[in-house]
Each structure stands twice: as structure tokens, then as C-alpha cells.
Image (tube, rainbow, N blue to C red; front, side, top):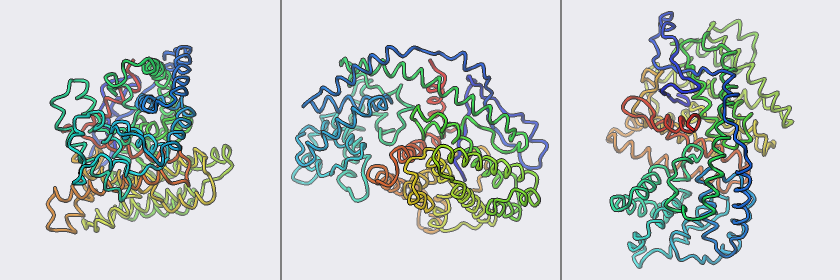
Length: 559
């Protein structure tokens, strides 16, 4: 039901080891394979590399000076910003990037000077990403008399790449960007066999993971940018910044894992609920994906804690084979938020979970109040109540064997995905844009929350692999859709789901790029959550996630 992920990693440091299988024999429920935990030692911190940052500061100054000095050479500035973003070091240059792109927007908003497809597409994408609205009509100049994109454009490979990248920032009603995506994708696929290895690798990765829908933090080391920018001195400086930056971030993220592991061990919840998932590294990955700013270390650690409870509560509804009566009691206890009554009425395994939920929510609320002067306890209680109610609805559906309509399923599935729990906690932990009006908007689950939740729910349902702890009885949007439309074949239903995911992305783009209610840090977290979803659900034939596992190993442990 919730934010599912299975990691089957080879031994690393921190080491990932199987939980004791003998625990499964003490319960009547079926054993749970492949539960993973992290064992880390506090001494790991002292063993980490602590590189000096003198070289990084020098190269950063060089790049800042060069970006400030580009003058009329807009393409050079655009390429520099593109490289910064792909190397995941753009946060060092935010002021310079904002100044350059604002100038570009003001000087070129009414009369686009670019006749080159590469420059036009890059200009369009970077300005939209920065929140400056650019009309897609700028691409009309690249159409022929038949109102189709000119086939002659196919010879401009960089132009095709950037046209495809630009098309990913479309919002509802922008048909020309849909045409641009279809045209550029077709051309790039056809050109693959004619490109050299470096170019082909870059094109293939672009088609599979376009920049706007990708997480640079995970792919910065594998971006294949050398053939694009390798002969420029500014690119050499950027690579030096990225190299040292990576080592420093690796140390930071490993320290965060140590903190989370210590918290999880002290909580001892996995011993009291041995059938629940025991995967703090997995839960941390969501926090790391959503909050990429190095300065948000404490927020990442705090966010991982409620994420763990999404999984634990999901397991109580799915795995412990509790009766509908017991699950109703737990949901009512969360609604009342009365620890004394809960301890009297709930079964023992539910008491443990509720106590942890109660204490953790009050602890986070107190920290938010101390930092930002706002007590979010009512909002957090409300989100947990809605999650449990959504879980209970699904338990009743699947327990009875009667599937709901696709519309009913998705409406409830947006809540049971757990996305709103994660984003509401992020909203309060960040403390930016914390107004009464925005808190009321959050309660209504606006598109900034429902869009990534839709993407997650539908991606999850498209997956062929069952989650490691599930019995395959969760139903899916595809199943409900085929029940609603008996004439649908599986392919037709899956195509409809992909269209719905595309529409959800357009809604999310609208919110992230042009909505002014929420702070950019929060909308970026929502965007990053959606970007993380494909990595979490790209299972192979062995029910593993090789893509995510490889990126995780590279990000945290490779030198």
C-alpha cells in the first residue's frame, strides 16, 4: 500500500544483513523473506575521508567569475548552468544562476533571438526550471508548412537532445511540447546506431532518464558530459568542484546513516514487531532524494523517522493478519490520539506501534515549534488519521475480494501511498512558507501533494513484482480499470495508466514551476519525490532493483 522498496544489496559499509529468520517461526503468519537492516558503528565517522576544501573554493571562484562575465554569449552561460545542474553542484552558484537567467528572461522574453534549436531548447528549459514562464510557441519557428517539426532538424543531435529535455516541462494543453517529445524521441532512437559510444550512452540515458524527471544527486557521477563540455576550462573547474563536493557529501550522508541506525536500534521496534519491515537504509533513501540540499542534514534524519512508521503501520494492516475489528480499533485510536485509552484497548503489537507513533509525532511537533514557532500537532495527527483510514478501506476491499471502481481505488490510493505523510512532515520541518493559509491548503491535499502521490500509486501498480512483504492481494489500478472496462486488454489498461502518469507530471510541473503559494524548497521536495518513484519500482526478473542499488552503492560507498 505505502512507499514500497526492496533492497538486496551486496555487503557494504554500513553492512546490510538479513534479519534472523528464526523469528518467523514464533508467529503463525507466513515468513517474510529478504528483510534488510543496517549495522553501523559510531567509529565509522572517524574513518571517513575529510578532504580539505581549499581547491574547491578556488575553482568555485573561477566559475562564478566566468558566469558573471559571459556578457552577450548567452549560449555559454546556458551551457555552464546546464553542466552545474547535471553535476549536482548548482547550489554553490544560486545567486549567479538567478542573475543570469533573470537577465535572459527580461531581455529575450518578447523577441527570441535564437534560431538554433539547441540554444532555444536549452534556454526554454532552464528558464522554466527557474520559474520564468516561457511560451512553447517559440518552437513554431522549427515547423514546416505542414505544421510538423522539420525533418532536417534530425541532423542536429544536440538540438534533438535538448528539444526532448525541454518537452519534459510541459503542462496541460501544450500540444506543441507533446509533439516535440514524440518527434525528438523518434529521431534520437533512430540515430542511436550511428553515434559513437559516448554520444550513444548520453542519448540512451537521456531517453531513459530525462533531466527534469531525474535525480542529479544519484546520477551526477554518470552523466557522460565529457563529449559536450570537455574542452572548456570552466568545465574542468566544475569537475574539480564536483569531485571534492562528492567526497564531502558522502561523509555527510554516512554520518546521517549512523544517526538513523542509532535511533532505530534504541527504539528496538523491530524486536517487538519482528514481522514488520526492518529497513532504515531504505527509509533514509526517500529523505535523501527529497531533501538534497547539504544544509538540510538534520531535516533528513528527522524525516526518516515518520517514513519508517508509514512502512510499519502498512505492515500492521497487511502482514499481521489483524482482523477488521482490530484494524478498526487501531484507526480509532489514531483518531482519538489518547495514549491511555489506546494502551487499554489495543492488542499488544498495536500498542507498541501506537506508542512509538504518539511519542514521535509529539517530539517532531515540539522541535518544529521550537525552530519555527508553529505547533503542527493537529496537522500531523490529521494526516496519520487519514492514512490509517485509507489503509482500513483497502483492508476491507481486499478482505472481501471485491474491487472498487478505478476512480474510487485511485482516490483512496493517493492517500494510502503515504506521500501526504512525507510531504506534510517536510512542509513543517522546513518551516518555509509556514502560514495559516498554506497549512489549510496542505490539509486539502493540493496538487503539489496529490500529483506525486498519483505518480507513485500508478507506478507501483504497474510493477510486475510483488513487494517483499506482500501477499499479492493489494489489487491495482490496472485490475480495477479492466473491471470497469471489460473490453480492455492488459496493454490497453497499462497504456491508459501511462497516460494518467503523464497527466500527473503535467499537473506537478504546473505546481512546481508556476505556483507561488509554497516555498521553492518544498515544491522541489515534491518534485524530487516524483523523480525517485521510477527508481523505487524498476524491478528486474529477480525481484530486485539493480538500478537503485548501483546508484546507492556509488553515492554512499564508492571512492
